[in-house]
Amino acid sequence: MTVVAAFMVPGSPLPYVRRDNPPWGALADAMEKAGKALNTAQPDTLVVYSTQWIAVLDQLWQTRPHLVDVHVDENWHEYGELPFDITIDTELAAAAVSATNAAGIKSKGVDYDKFPVDTGTIVASAFLNPDNKHSLVITSNNVYHDWEMTRTLGRVVAEQAQSLGRKIAVIGVGGLSGSYFRHNIDIGQDRIASDSEDAWNRRVLGLMEQGDVAGLQEQCPAYAAEAKVDMGFKHFAFLMGALGDHFSSATVHGYGPLHGAGGAVVEYHL
Amino acid sequence: MSDGQIIAGYLAPHPPHLVYGENPDQNEARSQGGWEQLRWAYERARRSLEEQKPDVLLVHSPHWITQQGHHFLGVPHLSGKSVDPIFPNLFRYSFELDVDTELAEACCDMAADMGLTTKMMRNPKFRVDYGTITTLHMIRPQWDIPVVGISANNSPYYLTTEEGLEEMDVLGKATRKAIEATGRRAVLLASNTLCHLHFSEEPVPPEDMAQEHPHDYEGYLWDMRIIDLLRQGKTQEVFEVLPQFIDEAFAEVKSGAFTWMFSAMGYPEIPGELHGYGTVIGTGNAVMEWDLIKAGLAQAAEGEPA
Ligand SMILES: [Fe+2]
Image (cartoon, rainbow over all chains, first blue to last red; front, side, top):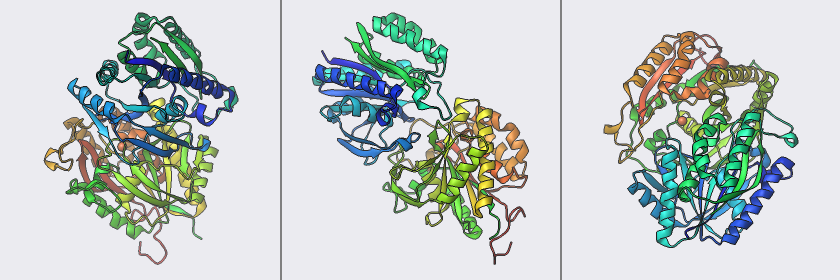
């Protein structure tokens, strides 16, 4: 089997930089549980799609062999730095660039010193791959790509992993409901900003737990629109593409607020 | 000490292509030129700025996006290498800048007093966004004037355009009060493109000007209408049609810099000087200047003729 594990995790830096705050600490604990599960599955490579890596022209894939730096989040800079040390599976990344181009999605590798690695990728890598034991393939969220194109990206990268004999863990990095608190709050009292969005999040997470893929496919468009889901929930489209639209059930390791927006750590059972 | 004042405002867009076309030492990527009309427009703007002798340049950039409030660079000296995430092939720029932290703090406090959520950015490892850097390089490549960098709160996208731009209007008024209170002679830089639909593929080489033209005629017509009104000093009329312009031409002024600048200047009904217009990967860019000294709305520096 090529895909040996699959996860959805939030890209917010808050659980990482302020895990001492109980609502966010719970998500940090959940991320660590996911990291343990990932390790048990023994993947060769982590394939990461992050909603926060915004691309506009082409589908971008990180092809620099080693990324090591310190990032400061554009919005949450007061909570400190996000150091990262990431090794790229350049062979699989190059194969993904070629194959997505062949599939009609214009793709390009990026190999530049100081190219900005997004917060979501860094946070996911820090929690799920803390010792830099696994190499990564990292790809972007092209804002002009829809659900189907994003699903295709997931499918194509899994096919390429199979032809290279890689065992991969697929990780969709992104949030759930998108309404958030625009002003300062008592962070210890953080909650999902909208009750109806909270209900939507719980319903969708419930369908995931049941492995109800047909139900999810039916509900996702309305969920994405009505709950203002992060980037149209395309991180889940990527996951579904890589999983061939199939998983048997899921474990929600954590669900909670990120300054009003929704975030969940979900492990999909294959 | 005389009271502080805003002496000029510039519409100063930030396509990294302009830096790439100029080939400054700070940028790694090399070109054979390109986008000369816009680069020469900036050369004219640079000469005006030289005469205005500001103490500080304030820049509002759409590529420092914040969700919780309006943020201000608050570290005295920032440096690093800025790589454009969309055009890394063109823009990999080593920057060093000094921040007027006293004015930044004053802007931050004043905007908070006027009801906005604000925050100082005090992390010395912060990476300054490429919009801020491109605008600053193009207007003042010597980097010898302190700056105040202001984030683009995403309220025009999260709320309605009108609600978001109302916040930018308040931010502008607060900026003006802070400038007056701190005694600075300040120049404002609105780092915005006009019509903003763009091509999805780059020519080879990117500076092949035979491939450069407006993305669509409708966007071009909108830009000419807006520039024409600005050149006539019909500021109020511009702001009346601004939401429609934003919707129909996908204009980057939605992010707020243009409204912030005009609000700070008091929406003067004075003719703007067009230094030049050009497209970059299909988007419309104008370099324009409002000289408040020449308009009699600000005083020249001591010893300088008005
Ligand atoms: Fe821009």
